[in-house]
Length: 198
Length: 377
Image (tube, rainbow over all chains, first blue to last red; front, side, top):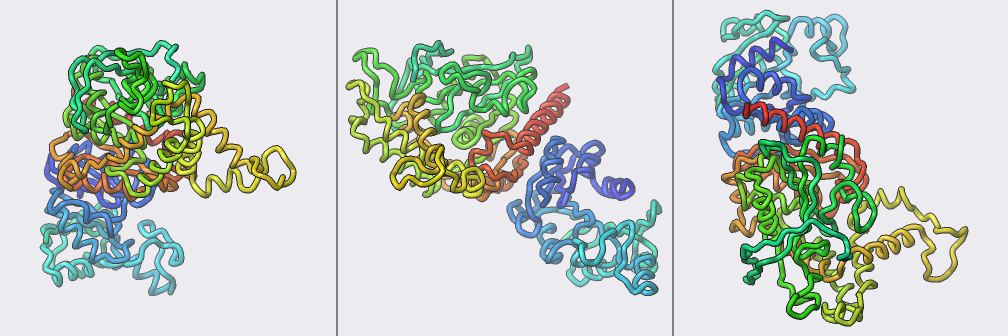
């Protein structure tokens, strides 16, 4: 978690305006508030988590990214962050489009379904993968649209979304993703972090 | 209504131009304060009351001898902690607890003003209360807070005075009174005016009181403050002090008895004309119309931080209407937080013991106070 926060924080310039979509209990918001910018908002669907955030004094709105991002004017944030949530939406493509409207830049992090540990579970055990990063069983997972680093990379190029930076994370090892190492990073990383722009 | 009680009061000498076109001056504003104003004058919170509220937010209400109407929220060690904050609440103009209203005595005639009182609006109420803040010499309030009609006043206050509050918390309210709400208010007014003792609003001249009409108005309104589920759980079809139906029109059911009681205690503390005037002010409230149909423009220049709260079972000021406020604020990039609190207690939730509401509100106010103070240092 901490590594992911650090990477995200490093992608963000100081004193910019940030929206964290699916901000959960506000840990990333708090981290960025202390390290990067005071001007940060959150959007979260769970009442309980929204109340936790507000209790900490964080500015969070209860809402659903699929329907409530529309209310923010175009380019009203310098950065919009979607941390490990894309897979939980009914319509991830729509959400990405909304994020790209609201934010000048968008940071998306993806739990990588192409990670070799995940692949091995399906290959050898023949069951849906359950890992540290993806702890749910098939019948109770909130994750509707799992994808791999390669899937998201390809998605961006097919939709003409510019990738400014793409970073792979394995444990605490950070590396850059590029066209030539894509297959390898897709196998060897548990998390992908993308800085994109429409 | 009981004028024997000593209320804190100031006389506003500045003329106040009302929305209806009339002008008032030398009029009283009754208020109460709790806690101490700190030396930097940075801990003041102005609380706005709802339709039937008054200035007695906390502690004992000297007129009803009951707890203040927002005792769950305001007081020592409460979410708005009076050990820390200086809380101000004024009776709205049009009210009957000492501020200028239809029951105020006209000095030239020695009689109550009655329906010669001018029609007032939420805007007028807020402008009158601003005079109190000036009188108390508070340059900037830490927060303006209120539920229901109090929330409407919060919105109007920030629109009128965009740099006078650091934080605004409108709770269970709307930016524009809906047809359904106007309908319920009209029902209440008609009940009062249909009472033969109303006498076109001059009942006090005849030593009369339209208490039957006012009680019916209160009973009808009270239903709208609850939820279907809450009513069913609390009362169901339970009978009142009897084992079987009596085959008559007495209060067989507990819910009937409860409503009758609510109606009867209300008439002891509230003036029927005030009920007419204040419900009218609510009906006229349409902040977006004041800004030519664009609610966002009301908040375009404000730096005030907002926290909007609604309740799941509130069908009088539903979440959708509270969300419109959030949407308008977001569209001008204002700093706004929002949560819908889970509660079966209907619109009244903001007045009652709803733990997740009280905790979230208290924590938010306290952590925001800390952050704002730290920034200043």
